[in-house]
Length: 161
Length: 266
Image (cartoon, rainbow over all chains, first blue to last red; front, top):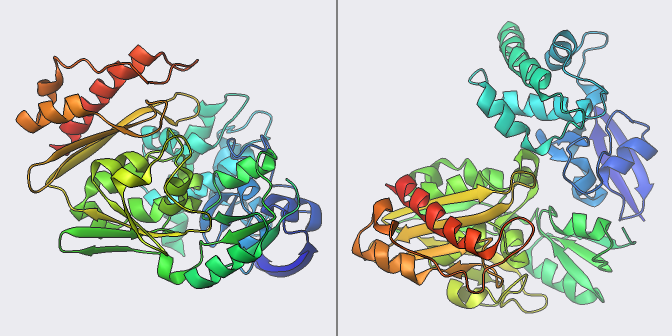
């Protein structure tokens, strides 16, 4: 057992957990942040993607010890109260989801993609960059559309701030 | 995953000491292979010693004709390093092709080399560029480092601290990705040293892991161009044959990827 201290969505949290605990299980089972999903358990599907110190990583492939002291953002931490994050709003407006299971990971990866590429996004880049996120409904068309739409919105909202 | 004990090492010496204390310890260098394997219970180390936050093991240094990548540098940080993009762009390009973006944020060059997966990308660069693997005990030439599938010259408890690459005159890497897993079905790294020596290494092809391809090296030494390989037939002997591709298919891929890599190298 170890005491893990980290910041999750701006809140300081602490938990006593077994060393084998994966970050995703700390989030879901101990902090009740169940928006982050476990899709495959084999580190392939990306449903568990969260931001750790600003980088989009698979929380099912990180021990809690590795995240000790880190700043973690989950899907629950990106909206401003009732106001959706531009990426969330774009997914809603473009119907970027079918069953919705992969959506939290898609959105966290997509925000990271826009952060890295800024407004210089094209369809090919988005498809290539979403390589680590699998949608089993195969609804990629609208997901890609959502990310491209959000890239424009994030540029506008960043300029406004 | 079976229960284990996690230790975050503060220095290379600390890591070696922590490893020695565990009865069946393993080093964790990003965990993008080790953790999936532990989740499947195919590995059950009593202790994992995390190397990823050791300051002396992170960073890329370019000095004169040598590029040194410290072992805990992530694929993302290698791919986006501007000094490396200028000096040895093929290596930055290779790092940017590993796995997917989330994997590249966590995976490290040291972890990739120590694991020596037969379809990993870095071994091809290390062998073709005639790099030197530095550990906490010694320096190992690329030729002596790779010993077959998932096997290296590393001794138990030995830690890769850095890899140094001589800057080549020309280098390129091309891989044919498996359409689902995105691993290299076959990847080829071509390099021409400043003294004119040509080395070519293929990953994902041989039953024994990364390998050099002498017939392609000779052809490129005589004429550094993709068309110089038009008449080459790579032998399928010793190549992998599995559900993803037969040995003769991989043999042809070696040639085609080598041609693409030469084109990329310019």
